[in-house]
Image (tube, rainbow, N blue to C red; front, side, top):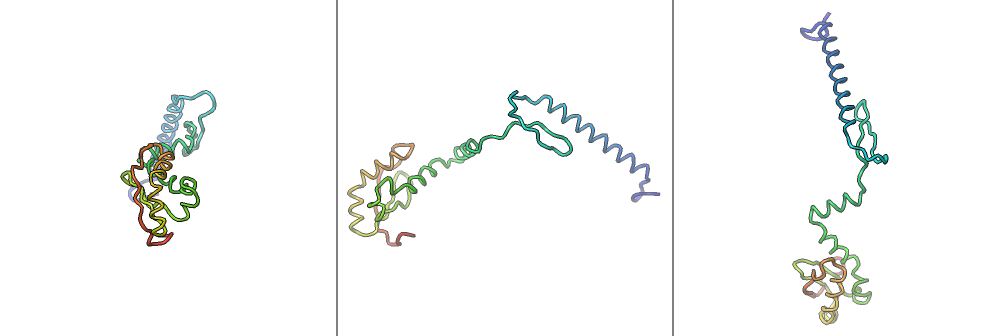
Length: 159
């Protein structure tokens, strides 16, 4: 009796026995490797299932540390600080100015601000130095904004 083309039952049993021995060697290797893993001694390590055995792994990292590393390695820190300034615009410039002027973009040290009408364009230009200084107080690199360009907001609040 054969269990496949050209294979006898004995061949299949030998193949399965070899597979079982290989799995036992793999388990023994994993156990040996686990014994060599450094432990902190304060139960910071975790046991996790790895197939049919349990492996000892270091405790997970804090999400804040992981996100911080990603932000710094990807070069996103400046963008996050800029978005924070845009989000906090009313508290930085005051509610009265924020009601009539909004930041559009910050690039190359130039903050572009869109004002609701020509009177507010003039007013924001008059306040530009003070606004620049207030915005720079909220950025880690204190001279991130070198100048402010004020434009008429022709697209409305959603543009």
